[in-house]
Length: 317
Image 1 (cartoon, helix red, strand yellow):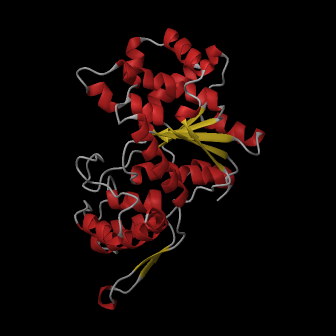
Image 2: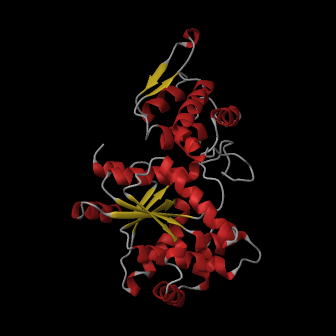
Image 3: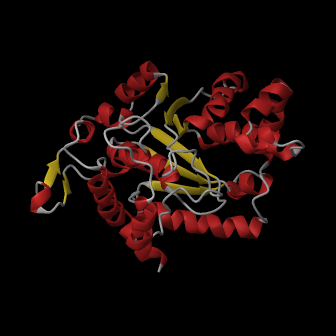
């Protein structure tokens, strides 16, 4: 896979592809960042952006990971001491998942977000951002609250300034970050900063086929062992032959095949024996036509997800 294809793999949207192509032609080592709010367990939704950062590293990008402890505090996820501890846990998980420690710059929000220049830029952007725009850019939880805090409206303003102050070419995040990234693209040039290129990854379904949510427990955490993954996978939504909105297939597309070129489904001889797939498209074909049974798909997911997450479990022991 060539450099540009690696960067674009599994991206839902790039704003804009033309700008990305021009950047990669002009720079041998562009820069990209993702910010993570330290607020709980790392699950496969988070790992999707980590996978994309690994792709970018392989394509020659310098990577910055923002461990957004101040953002988590503003979003009422704990005291500064508590969120800093979670941020440290996040950092260990991300490295265990495969980010190159020599090529990844981890930055805590509290390292620079209290500075005079940063705070002045936040205030400048508030002067050009309407109240409605700030509310639309809030995370979904904040938007649906009856009485959100002012801090939750400042949050997206700060995130836009993060991009400017970290001086990165590309902002990476889930498609749910789009409104904030567009705020940065529109607001930063008027302040003398570059408009970032924005690369958005999809939002994965929970294992039950519904929205992934901690309250539903419908996700795989990076510290789940094989027994836990197997228990969760047994109940996963996976209708035979259905390839659209199938959460088990999503695990293969976004997590397993980017790391394993070949996947072997182990089956008894009476059910056809082992079956080898050499790419996600091939997997879709054999699942849709009934060659591969949902239970075999689930068992394969258990095997490879356990292998993928083994380094994280070792680090956290």
